[in-house]
Image (cartoon, rainbow, N blue to C red; front, side, top):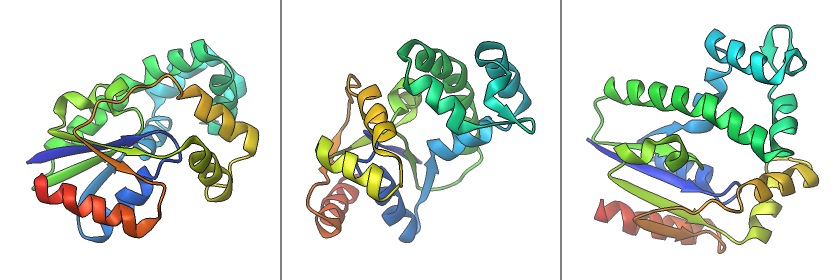
Amino acid sequence: MKIVGITGYAGSGKSTIARILRDVGYVVIDLDIEGHEILKEEEAKNKLENFFGKDIFENDEIRRDKLAKIVFENKNKLELLNSILHPMIKKRVKRKIENMDEEIIFIDGALIEKIGLDEICDYIIFIDSSEEKRLERLVKLRKIPFEKAKNIINSQRNIKYKYNFKIVNNNGLDAIKKELLKILKKI
């Protein structure tokens, strides 16, 4: 079994690459989805309530938008959130992979290395794109308000990625499909 990480900044095109891979039959674990699932677990709810208070809850569920507003405006609070959730995400993903029997499994996420999942990856593919394109995608495609999208990009500005392969996503779908195909032949 080979494990391949797909990483890059928000709006770079990781989800597009993941969708292409899923469409041709590969298994892709999405770290955003895994993180959202963790937020439904009692352990995470209790820890986050202790640090961020009851204001992040509505009907006993964590309101991700309220939590995001807090952490993307304060780097220390973002680091605190990550220190709580990353070990839980890592454990969940590793357990999931242990129960799979695939030739190749892809992990899609901006923070593969920060979570510590790079240590189980045989290869990492970095999806790169200009900041202008990333901002445009976050606002137009994901419908994220401009200021929030800018905060997300700013929060990732100092992240440096280690990778084996790089795809530059500034020239459309056909270009990234060609690059992805070249990489898959090498894996």
